[in-house]
Length: 526
Image (cartoon, rainbow, N blue to C red):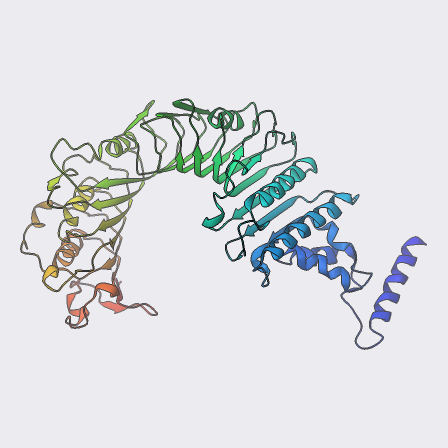
């Protein structure tokens, strides 16, 4: 009987809604479908507003499992009052959601970008402290109400970053223990954050801390946070743009279950960083800012290492690494230059890698004239895919030496991609496009009998590049396809037809790539 009554009321509501026109068929749908429709809306405010449509819609939004709040979706988000209304709206929505008997929101995402907001005076409540306190409330709400995923991002204009000294601290010390939180991302716009000292997050598998300063004793608390005692199931850890204060000179991170670690621009007083991660599969290190790095990760499979520390110590070889990305410098001041030592050591530890990516900085100038790559690359017989990003500014004719040193040790390549990037070529001229050493590439001894696919990207058209391209192509006897693109920014308008510069290849011809400028491809005729 009760089921029939509810169905009758639903039909009556639909008929009443359509009395002035077409029937409101959407409102006649069952609640679960309407909730799913609301869940697809991009922003929670839109879902809340549907309560004004009719009594049928009122309160349905409180059953949405995922709530997303983004100031970017507010076209009127320009004044401090708009920012305060945003915070009030989020607070009110979370309070209404928590008051329901339905299950708590499983996923919460808040993004507050203050950079478009213009404050009239420095005493305006737009000050970061107001928003840090709001963020603190939202984080605690997620931990207390069984939220499974929380993503919180704050952005502030630079003028507000320091005008309230001593009042920016966002304390997570009293963060309640959560047995349901699985994913946590906090990007807090430069706030000084006190990490939790007692909370236990038993279900947390992914943690991301970004754009924040860690308060006193932060190194010890960070080590505790990622440890098995606090987060026994932690598998993915992301630490980006963090600053630590004065404390111990050694940081030891022990995470037995950790699978992925991304470390970028983390600055602290430590001279030594030690990673004890027996199950780690992926490690990405950029701008490490330590003197010594010790790694214990015997199961590591994917390693990215850019802008390395002074010394790297690895417990043993890394036999499981299949993908490796490193940075090398082409020239130094003398043969004892140790710029490449650590990355050469990584190559020696990862001789079974199949995919290699190298960022090659052509550093030759009047003070650095010695080739510090030649003769130092270990033999890499397992590498079948090689990508080389060449970054050079003044010396345009020295990139081939470093690349050739890599190619000689990767004799089983199937795929090769070479991309050039010019950083300071304001004075690039027609004269610089010609090299007075036409035979200097013949002695490289490149042999690529297994190469199937070749790509050269963003060439400037200088003679050295074209000779190098021809040298590689002549050594690739089994090549199936090739692609060449030129950098239009540095291509003089009075240069002869670019097609005339393309190397001649048998069993096929060069054709223009559709929709791209100065790009050509070649495929072997079957």
